Amino acid sequence: MTDTIVRLHPFDGLFFRARHLDLLQDYVRTLSADSTRAGGRGPVYGLNVTLDGPKLAIAPGFAVTGAGRLLVSTQPVPADLPTAPASGSAAWLIEAISVEVEGEPDELTYTRLPGSASSDGGRRSSTKIERLGVRVTAATVPPGVLPGNLRSEVAAARFAAEHPAPGLPGSWSPPPPPSTSDGVPLALLLRTGGGWLIDVWSVRRDRTEPLPEQRRQWSAGLRPASVADAGLRQFQAQLAEQLAAGDELFLSETDAVTLTSIGFQELPPAGFLPLLGGPLRPSALRAPFGGGPAIRVFACDEATARARVEGARHLDRISLRNTAEPRTVDVLVPGSWSTPAADGSVTILPSTSWAVFVRREQVEPEPVPAPEPDEIDLFAVTPKPADYASTIADAKVNAAPADQLVATLDGSAVPGLDAYHQVAAKLAGANRMTMIVAVPDEDDLPLASRRAAQVLSGFGGVAATADRLPGVRIAGLSRPAIRLIAEKP
Image (cartoon, rainbow, N blue to C red):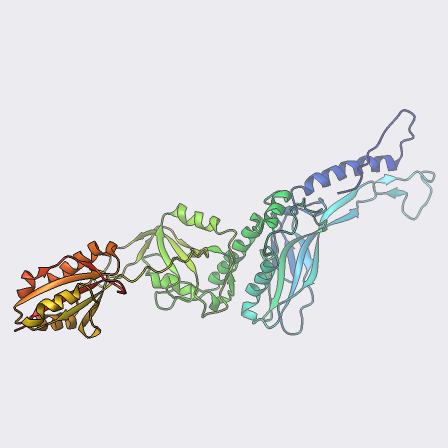
């Protein structure tokens, strides 16, 4: 924006000259540019870049520069291809710029007598034509990139440069004035493998949101709609070109093509995948991402799938470079699950010709302390008749010796097979039996008593008539205990 907006102040007797007309024109242009800048820079429609033989062709369209200039073209604009390097890869940025040229001489000049000879024929142009021009400048290529991965890596570098800075902004004050760049990026021109390649969405950012809204989102670490849309469209355009060249993602369940094998090193946080007709196994849907259980597969309705794409706008992009890293990705297919087969396997029956992949949100709940082990010790002893009463009396006040431990039961589990046979052997031939439950805390008595009764119910014979004494509290116990005391002759 200009520091000062100047307009003409006419008055009677003013000698009206060309500079006064310029002042009128400049005033209107300044107002237009300043108000247009508030909507932000970028293409509005059209201006697609394609290869046309030995030249570039920019389709008709409309864009706005950072300075607020309108770039309008009603017919294709050609541009020369740059000189290709002898070897290796290279990239160029293609921008739309404003170009002014004088129109055809259409007015007589009155600095000489009409009819006298002059070198310019006595005419000057009374018009200036504003045209959309094309600027092609060299761009940086990431070093060490394989030709087949160049497009994806260049796009990844461009999107990484726009990634919101970590942390909160250093100041919450109003932002400074925006850039007044005179160019509008339209595409990247790539030279790789001896051929030319155009990638539009690595650099093109359409004019989708007002400038204040874009800057608000950047300051809060969010991704403006133009950047999110460009990331999605860059992937979809490259994928469509790869599939048109003969690659298929889902040839069959066993030989699905991976995204890395067709040149993708990074993906947007969400996108669409084409599907072939017919049912699909979950393993086939995981295969393009390298497989693995971290990739979850869902059947859903179409609206849910589209909403997940929109909801992933501010998430980080998905890297495919590290094959050992689990892909935290959800695949959503509009459709329904089939009835499980005899072997338990299922398939998804798609209702559309596409599926959605979405990066999962990375959240980790507050760690919850592990619950105390719910264990109870099972002891068994077989005293002689003379020692039966004293053994019971001792069990009421003292912890059982370690050599009487038969098993430690987890939760409400019953004794395992070995413990069962060991207890059954001790009970075999017993005259009578007593059961005592000992606990370190009286609050544990009700539950421990019920579990003791459950354990005792698993044994017949003398166990069915066992005396079940009231539970006791014994200080120093690490956990509840069941004492089985069986008198042997």
